[in-house]
Image (tube, rainbow, N blue to C red; front, top):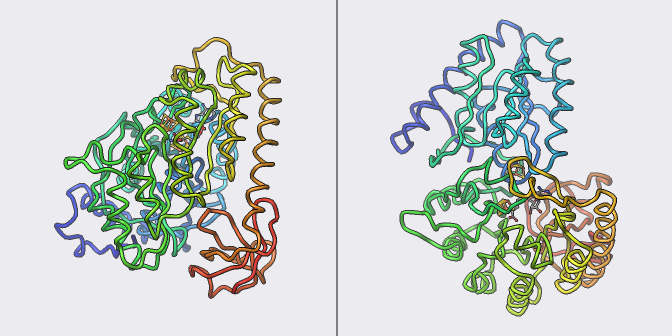
Length: 478
Ligand code: SAH
Ligand code: SF4
Ligand code: F3S
């Protein structure tokens, strides 16, 4: 949503909090203009984002606020304001940030106007904030996942004080709507439908850093999508950690399947995607809605995590291998063309060779178009972190490689099946390697490269998939 932002336009339609934040943005605009005159150039800002689509959407909100203030957005960290939107789902995501902070310090020493802010999931961990307070004193602002809407207010606080500004909320029930937001693409957009997670899978830190599950009102969601469509968006991705439990805590409860039916009605919207689906909450009515929908893409991301019912129980996933396979059966019977993808964790505490074989068995039975495979990473504070029997690194590595091989073989076979068919592709960009080609996304989420020019970007066109290259196609427009 690209809102024009003069204060006069911020009418009573907006909540008090939204209006308050626009006031801070207005104040900062004045500060920004003074500052640019003082130093004789525009100020630049860089938002670096780690982690999932939810974080990417938050980064767009951050960018929206900064652009309203006046900042020129740049890709490089040699900027006047650098913001890291962090992820902590696995340890390596976390370590990356510390690695880069040292580099930022060097840049800051060269640029007296530079500010550094850290936000996102990592900042919701007390140990992280303590460490930054102690060893990374040059960070200016730290905020978390619940108060992104306050960025302008926090910047103002930093300008008014000398020290580091830290504002972390443990949790919230508040959803602040209608703040500015920038979009990375003009033809597709992510739309939050819910925040937080209540599932507490025993390995996962997300519920601790994203708080309890809360759904946005359907009216707000539909309004946002209508605005996006009016702005040229044809494809939306509905975002939530567990979209299948959407609407349970609304004043007027509503199911995800019902929400999808409302969204389907929006004229001009061509494609609907969503993630992530938790298998335990995927209803038969959702399968029905998907089956009859003209707009929902033929792709479902259905994380299995493990194929062993014993491990699934300890993971607190609330389904067995058999229930998962039965669900997949029902989905495939209703929609034989559906492309299924998944997430798998290898090396969960206590995972035996037999457990791992069960995972391989699920992969062979389901036949995923692709799978994100992760080595289990111990997250402090989660139940799994204190489980004994953490699996030996070498064993995990060996299982991981076997898993990857299996996934890749199956996915190559599946991709091959579509060769020589004609399918609709949404053209997303000029091909990165060859400027005479464009890259389009098929309904099943795979990519196809074909001759075309910039004018096609954002359009949905028919493409013949001439040649399968493993995970993508070379095609031609028909
Ligand atoms: N809400 C989504 C997943 C969000 S996290 C869902 O339930 O499906 C994305 C993926 O990261 C998870 O599906 C899981 O496979 C992986 N993941 C989460 N915690 C992890 C950990 N501690 N170690 C390794 N992988 C993890
Ligand atoms: Fe993590 Fe489980 Fe919630 Fe997904 S559903 S975010 S894996 S706790
Ligand atoms: Fe990472 Fe937070 Fe997403 S921990 S995966 S950015 S919800």
